[in-house]
Length: 147
Image (cartoon, rainbow, N blue to C red; front, side):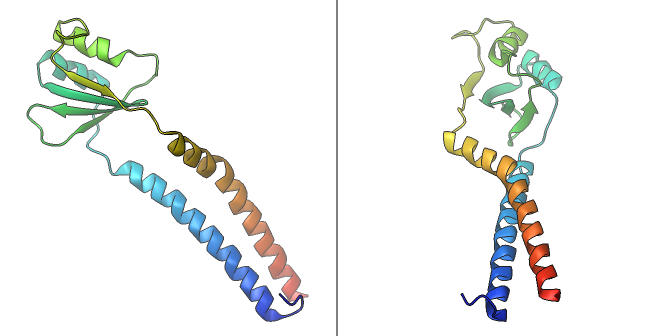
């Protein structure tokens, strides 16, 4: 690129704006993707439904539970307050059985993929730094063009 040309400055500005736009869209997509989950209901309602025999299956993904009820076609979403809660044991105890083959509720745990952890780290840690750095660079270039 030629140092003094206006084409070079415009190109750099477009590149900065494009990078900021891509990271902004990635961040928005991450939050929108999380909001498209099933209807949420409290953990106490899960235990009450287990006592009533309405719970068919539970899939645990970190602190998030996807609950399949006998009388509802869609999955319900429950968020557990702490990772130290043994959900399977508590739900089976609510049904009056011990965890194991006697418990009538199907329970599965989904492990978080390492790729998802890295993407989450990149978005939450580096995206704000890149956005602020891009904004500062954009403002400095705009100031240089005014001189």
